Image (tube, rainbow, N blue to C red; front, side):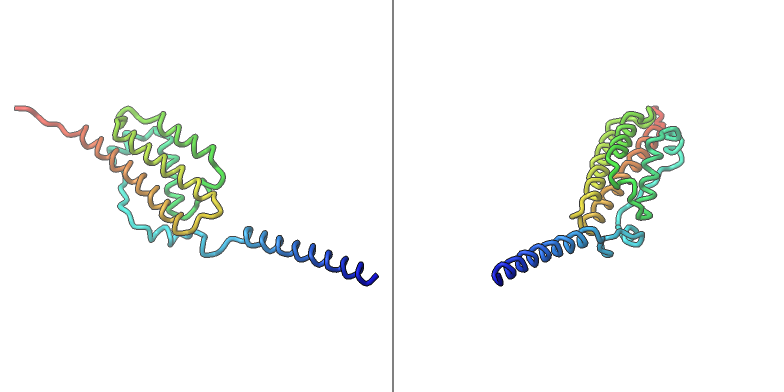
Length: 172
C-alpha cells in the first residue's frame, strides 16, 4: 500500500516539475531582452556616408512613388521604427518589384539598376533577420548600416547620372 502511494506521488512530482520547466522556457522566449531593442541613439551611432538627392535628381523622380515609399521606410528606420519589416514579407517584395518596374526613363541605366538590386538584397536580408528570434542586436545594427549604405549609394548614383546628363561639352 505504501509502495503504491509513493509511486503515485513520484509520478505526480515528475509531471509537475516537467510542466514548470516548460512554463519557464516559454517565459524566456516571450519576454524581449531590453538590450536587444533597437533605439534611436543606436541607429544614430551608425557610421556611414549619407548622400541625399540634389534638386535636379529630385525633379526627375518626382512621380516615382516606389522611391518615395522607400524613402519613408528609410526615414522610419533612422527613427528606429522597424514596423515595416515585422512579418511584412508581402509588402517588402511588392515595394522591391514596384521600385524595379517603375524607374523613371531619365535615370534608367545599368548603374541605377545595379544599385537597386544591391538595395533589394539588403532590404530582404534586413527583413528576414529582423523577423528571426535569434538575431542579436549587433547583427541587426550591422544589417541596418548595410541597408542605409545601399540606399545612400542609390542616391549617389542617381545624382551622378543627372550630373553627367547635364554636362554640355562643346566641340571645337
